[in-house]
Length: 264
Image (tube, rainbow, N blue to C red; front, side, top):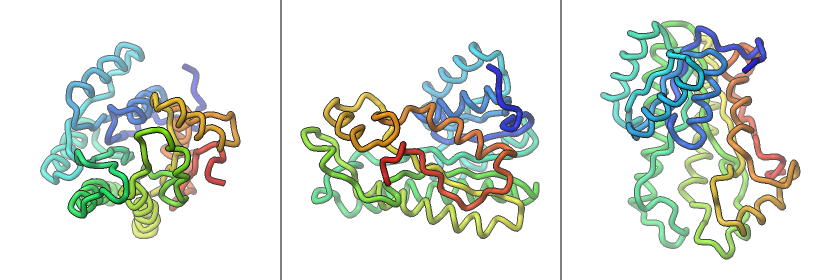
C-alpha cells in the first residue's frame, strides 16, 4: 500500500485500546500500514491474537503485539506501560477506543437501574481517565505525546429516537452521558497537558455499519447528507492516522465529527 508521507507513522509507538474490536481492528491495521509500532490492547485475548496473526501475515510487519489489559485495572495498565517501554522505548500515542460496559448496558431509559448507570459511567469514563493519567506520566517525561479519545455524535447531539422504531435497539442514556463527558475530558486534558507538548483530540463518529436491522439502517441513512449510508470503519481510519501524524502537529483540544453530515 502506498501511503501519504505526511501521515507516515514510522518510529511512532501507538497503543490502541479496544484494538481487536470492529473499529479498533481497522485502526490497528491502518497504523501498521503507516509503519507504526502498534500495541493492540483488548480484554479478548483470543480475538486479539488472531488479529495480530492476520496482520502479520498480510503486511509482514512484526512490530505489532497484543497485550491483554483491562483499562479499569491500574496493575494491568502499569504492566502494559512497562512492557511497551521495555520493547519500544517510548509511548508516542494512546488511542482510547475501548468500550467497557456491563451486561445490562443499553436498556431503555425507564428500565435503567441506578447502579448499572453508575457502573457503566465509571467503567467507561473513569477507565479512559485512568489509562490516560498513567500513560500521560510517561509522555510528560518524554515531553511529547498524542492522545485520541473516541467520542460520538451522541456526545453533543440529541438522539433521533424515531430511527429505532420497529427494532429492539435504542440509544442508551449511559452512552450519551459517557460520550459527552469524554468530549469535555478531551478539552480538559488538552489544556492541562499542552505545556508538555502533548496533544489531545477526539473523534466523534456517526453510526458505523455493523449488520444492524435493515429498517434502522434505512432510517438512519436517510438523514445522512453524504452518500445516503452509515459510516464504514474506513471512513474513520484516515482521520485517526491524520491525528496521530505530524500532519496535525498544531491541532489539539478538537472534536472531529465524522458523520456524513448527519448531525447538522
